[in-house]
Length: 310
Ligand SMILES: NC(=O)c1ccc[n+]([C@@H]2O[C@H](COP(=O)([O-])OP(=O)(O)OC[C@H]3O[C@@H](n4cnc5c(N)ncnc54)[C@H](OP(=O)(O)O)[C@@H]3O)[C@@H](O)[C@H]2O)c1
Image 1 (spheres, rainbow, N blue to C red):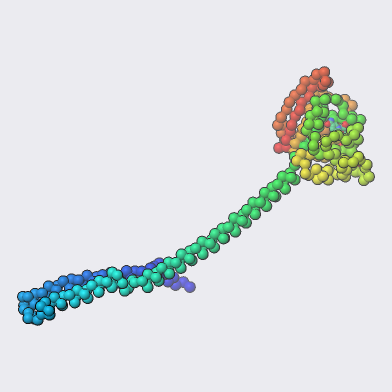
Image 2 (cartoon, helix red, strand yellow; image 1 turned 120 degrees about the vertical axis):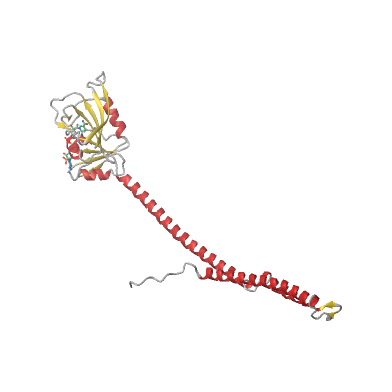
């Protein structure tokens, strides 16, 4: 358990075999070289033995001295030795080459298999992350669908007056035009009393009327709900549903809205009976304002002010 780990040689079996073969090869060449030197010395010795020392001086074959045959025979042996080393090379011959080749092919095949395996793993990971990204995108799109900009739109005097006897207190054509421009094509959420203040439903908008009455009758296309939450839910697919009043609904929805499109009428109105709640500057930030003076068509000066929830 606590003993030293046995050291594993970093040189693998194949490398060892290669080194051993290289050593054999060196020895092989060394022996050939020694053979050559001995042959040279031997040849000289044979020539001297015959010519100087007179050994077998009279022994000739076909008129040629014996040492010539001896040297030729040795030369033949040396040539055979040379051929085995450099041409047929016994130790690192064809068989050995074939073995090495097979090993290399095997190793390459293993590497290719491993690469294939890694590639498949990587591909699987990419596919999974793509699927994840797609599902994230779908979630984000779904979230976007649900995260709409609930906007209050209102016209209020300096004293926050918005109505009297279930009607508006002023007539400002530019304000009505702006109301039409902003709300057209959207859902408009209102209290039952505000709905009843219209002679008929406004064109090109989906009306959602909030009432506590269970059998409240409305024209075709008008949605009736029994509370504010259901009204907002009915408009969930709209990217900007509008809360259009009146006083009761404004009070209940100001905490839920993200945006406030205010027409501030620069006057006070005695006798008003409905009011917009006070705008808390800590919660709402003014992001734009355009002011219009009073003129022939507009009895009062007014400003279009946009607020966003902080
Ligand atoms: N200046 C402006 O921009 C502006 C805009 C809109 C309206 N206004 C004015 O505001 C006045 C109307 O406002 P308002 O406060 O009297 O009435 P409202 O808010 O338009 O409607 C009140 C009615 O809505 C229903 N309601 C309210 N809260 C509810 C809830 N939580 N659950 C279910 N139903 C609910 C009730 O209907 P039921 O009684 O049927 O249950 C209630 O009587 C009018 O004078 C109008 O001209 C002014």
